[in-house]
Length: 385
Image (tube, rainbow, N blue to C red):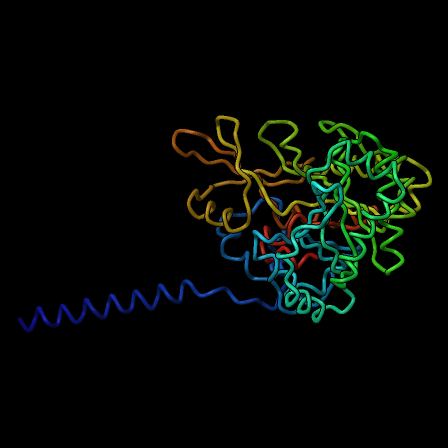
């Protein structure tokens, strides 16, 4: 019995020790002094998956308040990905614009227009972000939802209708003390009725400008496999009214329907060059923001895919334990493969080298960067921004 009691005590001690170890293992990795570059982590192909899983939260605490990217930086934040709210506060000094995805402008049955999504506005968080960077501009996205061609005609064929719609936008943004707006209207109409779209964007911009509020515009890519629905002439017409053009140079895989890079860099830069072809536009290249995805995709053998965000990617690396990675030179994207349920999966996700290449390209082209979206990436990415 004495021996059994000793063994029992030993067993209990072992269990307690294991629990303590487990708790220690779960502790969040602390920021470090050196940047990812100084630690030799910005590689085309990681030496192992552990290089990512062990380091992705270890950003340099010495560079949290230092802006490394020479161009202007915009970060989208979504209510369904709360980590983005923390990123905006922690790394706010690196951003020129933060764009929360909160708001929609919709037609009403009474023939008027209203802004929805106000319940998502977090005034306390806005104060915190501004406290960390007094120069930052809070510019929520405003997407045109449930609009038909009829609504477009209704607004542009009547001066009073157009004025009413502009007033709705101006009064809301002025009331909330926002610094800017990111309009998303172009893609919904697939480039049809361009003159009417120009008219609406100009009117909103002029109304907001009187209150010191800037206008940014989301524009779709125009290089195959996407149709060219926004071109260099649209840019030329709108640039006097638009502070920044946010080009959606991602979701390439959606258009091809094939397993492949999400935002291949060679294709992304061709989209930038397409706008810059016009001689006058070259003088305003600083208004372009190169869209960079912070999410990836997990392609299954049946041709379907799932979107992948940072936490899912880390969990997948830990479970799949890939033995090697592939660097796609032209696309400047990283991928790996694994087998699950007799299917081969192909996974694409941003890496440090992926981001560094896009930062270097943006600086070379003298343009800015817009990130969709900052809660989806890995924390150590911000060492490079």
